[in-house]
Amino acid sequence: ITKTITLNTGACMPEIGLGTWRANEEGLLAKTVKTAIALGYRHIDCAKFYGNQREIGKALKEVNVPREQLFITSKIWQNKHRPELVPGALDEILDELQLEYLDLLLIHFPYALKPEKATKEFTADDLENVPIMDTWKAMEALVDSGKVRAIGVSNFNKTIIKKMLPQCRIVPAVNQVEIHPYNPSSELVKVCQENGIAVTGYCPLGGTKVSVMDDKLIKKIAETHGCTPAQVALSWILSRGITVIPKSTNELRLKQNLEKVMLTTEELDLISGIKKREHKVDPRLDLKELEWVIHDDIAECPLI
Ligand code: A2P
Image 1 (cartoon, rainbow, N blue to C red):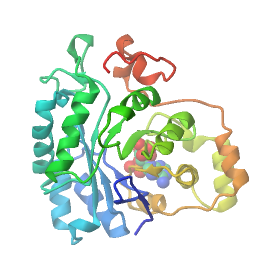
Image 2: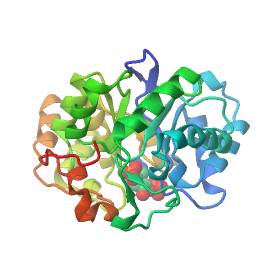
Image 3: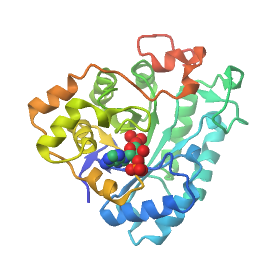
Image 4: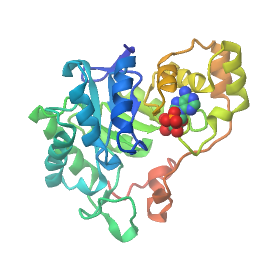
């Protein structure tokens, strides 16, 4: 069973979780969830948008682990930002996962799409101006309902976080963002951690597009420790107090990803010193209108 970090709610979150994005092959995900739980994973990261929550829910029903020992996260999609749509969005997620409550519910992205836009493909015409605080207040009400134990955000940059904080009744427990050695997001992580917001790193291995695991330095450090580059990358992220949700459907790699490596301070600093920058920016964020979402130096957040 993995180590946990304590959220600002007092709840414990396992520092290593199972990512379930890009695991849509029929039957494979259920098998992966069951294998992961048998290996000791207790934290599963889901999202409405991934389109696979029913399969995860079914697998969770079949494993013999008490609900209170699991930490289940999900995320509301961008077409459910209107405050009146938020409670129904949660009910749908709970129905798909067949759960009574979530440990953590996140706003998947900081900008809204029109309600009919449930898919990934959209244009600037499909954006909708729902102030993020309106959505956040609806999220806060969900905590009061008992159906979620904690609420948080995902893909929020430091500008948005700073603007939100003074207006929050409940401070986000988590900001889940892309973190790996080629996208360390040091300033964002600092702002979050200084304000009691835990950071979870998605694509901690760089996902399928970013070649972190081929990095010369990371490979060399892995050789020194007789471990894999993936373990080095994950251990470096964990050393920064950031939780990770690597995705794998392979039993050996699932097991490896749970095994932390004790890197020396020097090794950690060397990895922090990597200058290469690459990120798995979703093509939809290339929209001109959304530059403010990904570029931290743009002070204007038009939707706040
Ligand atoms: P696979 O499922 O075949 O293991 P992310 O950074 O988004 O979590 O991406 C993980 C990607 O890296 C997946 O494509 C996954 O493929 C692969 N992967 C996961 N764990 C490891 C590992 N320990 N070593 C090498 N590749 C891995």
